[in-house]
Length: 282
Image (cartoon, rainbow, N blue to C red; front, side, top):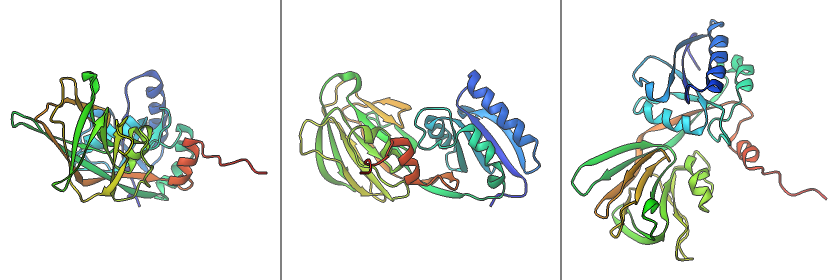
């Protein structure tokens, strides 16, 4: 339930004309009502995660959500996504529907779904370490090497196997409908506590997706990696990965908080976004 006056941060994808027009319309509606206090309109790289606000309205696509929750870092807030992109698994509301449903949002007539996030620790051969927070997936990809990539997977310190192909994905349930789905991985319900390991174009027919627990630590190595191999976080952070590098993926200390309105259940969303119309009757 939001406070009597909810403090709103509007986060926009970019400064393009279309996004600015929608943001201005939302800003005008919110500032005209006593229930709302808009503390700012910012792009994702301008987010001050420690500022005072209780709700984020993200205007763009799922990429805007991914950047927003990463910028929020250890100070996650509930996020409402307004879709100006394509599919919009996370940005599920149109601008018109958001404006129409403002009264129920003001009443707190919604659910907040907490979703698994991950921390990816990339240890370089020179001893330096980068740590990234993410929501969708970590991808270790052959990329510009243009050669078969062998990825060694260990879970909780136990060697599982090695995968030869175009790469390997470690995805959250939210990320299971992104790159992992395109690579033939399963769809996981978004509130599951699990990761899915999905090979990308594997060379062996027996290499299949694997689902394991959210409390596990997933370690990736590529001992024969050629120049051009990349470690990619949420499709947005891209770092070269050398043959002596190590990536460790584990559950983050924080969770992504997604606002779900009535009529926007998970399976309802899949039905609409994936065209699950079912078989014709008769």
